[in-house]
Structure formats: structure tokens, C-alpha cells
Amino acid sequence: MNDFRKERRLKWLRGWRVLLLMLLGLVIGLLLVAGGATVMHKTSDTAFCVSCHSMERPLAEYEGSAHFQNPAGIRAECADCHVPGEPVAFMLTKIAAAKDVYGEITGKIDTEEKYNAHKLAMAESVWKTMKANDSATCRSCHSFDAMDILAQRPEARRAHPVAIKENQTCIDCHRGVAHILPDMTSSNAAGASQLAALTTNVKPADSPLYSIKTQSFVLEPGVTRPAGTLFPSTPLIPLRREGSLTEAQLEGWQQDGVAGVIYGAPGRRIIRAVLDENSQQQLKILGSQADSQTDTQWHQVALTVWFPSEALIADRQKIWQYAADLMSANCTGCHGLTALDHFTANQWIGVIKGMAPRTALNEEQLRILTLYAQNHASDMPAGQLSAQGRSHDK
Image (cartoon, rainbow, N blue to C red; front, side, top):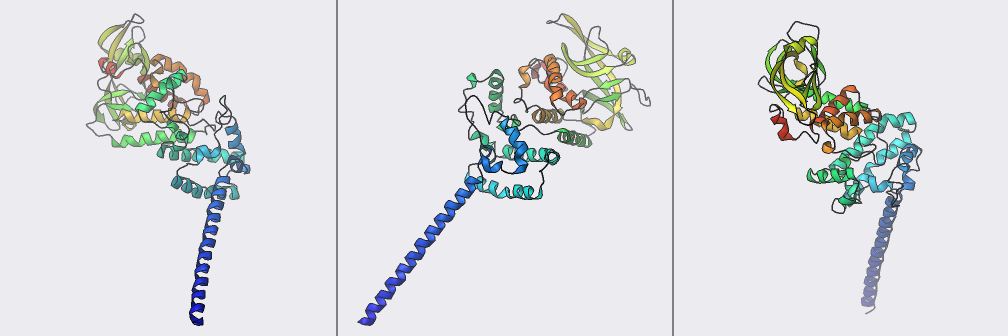
């Protein structure tokens, strides 16, 4: 009998030990979870983020933005923009932040010179992430469904319906909302190199072809003195190739009395080519029409030209994509992207000239950007392009 009671007591004690161990494990687990959550939360708040010396410069940029101080009194903290709320994405972001700790320890951006040298790479990394996740952190506060678009400023009223229709994401237009844009010079140059690489894909049967840069032309092979200049995106109908040169027909419009320039459309200052006196004499007039708005006479003209073959591509949209990237990367530091149809083709010339000093764009890039905006301006609908002798354009 005593043995039986002793056995029951031992079983009871073992049961309580197991229960106590389970409770202890549960308490430890809760403490670990709570502690981990506290650590994750504390290492995500703005005070922690800006406690490092290397964050002084981005902090100053952030404090000068509308996300720090605004009429509504709503402040977006660092984590609101840089740490997604979805659990898996949150953990992956926190794990990836280890590289920032390593960078702080090694002094990767601990001086203004180092910070500026790495700023573009850091910005492009953030932009790439936001593009991939449909600007998830932005949309945690902003959504098209919640917007009263009619109450927005005129530029936003025009841009947001287009963004909705074309399934754009926030970072496509708003790259400079919290931090000053980095120097985009190297990024701009990389885009030009990618465009140049496409010239090797041109096939003999491709027509029309498009110039990817400003380049000189001659009227016959073997002549070294230029007879004029082709502008980027100019459409050309190839006729034949001779060595490294291509013979092509250049078409466009000239204003009566202004023989030195070929434009893309009557009444629009969309420059396709600039001609010397000899070239002007070789022009063929294909037709004429009057511009009803200015009461000026315009002539549709054609000219046969020779130029180097290595700066031509068959898809004009590649040039426009390069230009769109230039606009997105360089024109969002002060505002969102302006809808291309907000201005006429002629108005865009002055707009881009006025904005040019605030960008890292060189003269050639500004020219391509201007032509892109002009060709998609409010007075250049697609149907009008073909009606004006532009049926060859893509």
C-alpha cells in the first residue's frame, strides 16, 4: 500500500514538474517575443535611426521636407517610409539592415564626401525596392481610393488620373519628397550607354530608323564638311548603306521664309534638322499648308542625306523610354512629374529651359528630354502625327 502511494506521489510530482517547465518555457517565450518586438520597435523609431553620426545629412534633408512639417501636422517617421508593415517584408527589411550597421562601423558614409559618393546607389536601391513592392510604405498612408482628386492642386488633378489609368506607382513620380535627389550624372550617362547598345540590333530591312543623338550629316559620301545637323529621335527612311555610312531620306516641315530648319510638324518648333545653305538648295517640297493659328505658310519637305550608321535604332520608343527615365530621375526633386500634355509643343521649350539649371542634365540630354515632351504635348495627338506626314513614326 505504501509503495502504491509513493508511486502516485512521484507521478504527481513529475506532472507538476512538466507543467512548471511548460509554464516556464511559455514565460520565457513570451519574454523573448515581447523583448524581440520591443527591440524591433525601438530600432525602427526615428530617434534610433538618426542617432548615428552618418545620418546627420539625411536627417537635415528630411527635416526640410513636407513629410517632417506640413500644414496638416502629420509627420511621416523614418520607418513609415523605409520599413514595410507586412510581417515577412518587415523581418526581411530588419535583417537587411545589418549592412547599415556594418556600414556605420566601417565609416562607409561618415563624411560628406563619402555620403555624396554613395548617395545615388543608396537612393536607387530604395527606388528599386519601392518600385517592386508598388510603393507599399507610401500606400500605407496614401491611396488613390482615398484621394479627393478634385480638391488637389491643378497639377495633381491632371497627373493622378493618368497614374491610375497607367497603373503607375508612387515612386515613379515622387522621388524627392523626403530627401534631396542625388547627383544623377552617372545614372543619366548609363541610360545613354544602354540606348547606344541597341544600335547593334538594327537589321537591314528595318525602316524607319531613328537617330539616338545629335549628329552631323553630308549630302554625299566622301565629303568631310557637314551639310547640317540631325537631332535626336529624328525619323529617317534608309535607302542604302555604303561602308560605315547610311543614305536616308529626311522628311519634315519648314516655315515659309525659314529655310535653315526642318521641324517635326507645322506650327511646332520640334527641330529635326538644321541645314546649311547647300542643303537648303537640295530640298524637295512635297506639299504646303497654312497654319490657321498663326496664318503662316508651311512646306512639307524632303532631303536625301548621308550620316554614320552606328547611331541609329529601329524602335523610337526606346528613345522615349530613355527620355522618360531622365524626366523621372531629374524632375521629381521639386515636384511630381508634370503630365506631358500639360503644355503645348512650343511651351515645353521654355519650361525645360527654365528647369534645366536645377538638374544634372547636359545639353544633349536636355535636347532629348525636350523632344520627348514636345512629341507628346497637348497639341500633338497620335492621329495628328500621321496626318502630318509622320506615318513612318512609331
